Image (cartoon, rainbow, N blue to C red; front, side):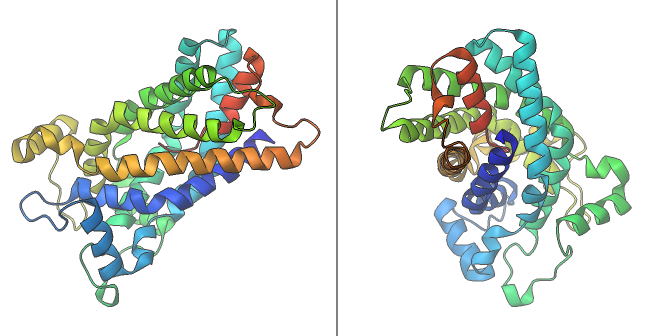
Length: 307
């Protein structure tokens, strides 16, 4: 039941946060010489004006398709790792989260590659003039495989691993510390707001800890759109990006990312909590009790599928 709740909660998070993710990717990979967007608000306005509201949801099929598998991996690995470690401590939460994050990269990387390519499709073009290269996320991955093989489908795998491993670790650690310090009690009328706050702030902490890596990952995965490749490796991408735009390149799209992080996690936690309360009316919100075993269960229920 936790798995089902996590999937539904993750889907709610994707629906709420995908427009912000589209803006983030556009800002991260736009040309420094001829930028199309001046900032987060201008990017939102331009996409809606040129591509309609649906333009903000380009590539949403990919994260939706990978959602079930990513949740299954994250929940399974995190739970089993915690059982192997034996004690519910902040450090063990970090290690279990890091293990879950590293293993789910197998699905996360191709999923985000398709999402990024779909989000970049038709950039700066009127909706009526857009030439669709990819019909959908599956068609995108199929075309990439035909041109570049398995290596192309897994473009950005190393940077995804570097991002997801500490990212999930920080998320679980921050969530553990916040839920303990907020003192979530079964009879507390503010239990759900506390969980929403803890989840939202944990998501922000996770993104802040790995955001520079995410910028490089997005650039590598967007590289090759139109048949032209700019980067030969992670180091080459990092070096060229710094040379052209300075160290501020690692903050491109950060505003939209942080704006997205809180509501995404809030939507995920609210959906998971309401779903579990509905199907477990006789249990109530016992998963939030401060006992270690219950606290670990709550962490599993609240963890979203993508940071």
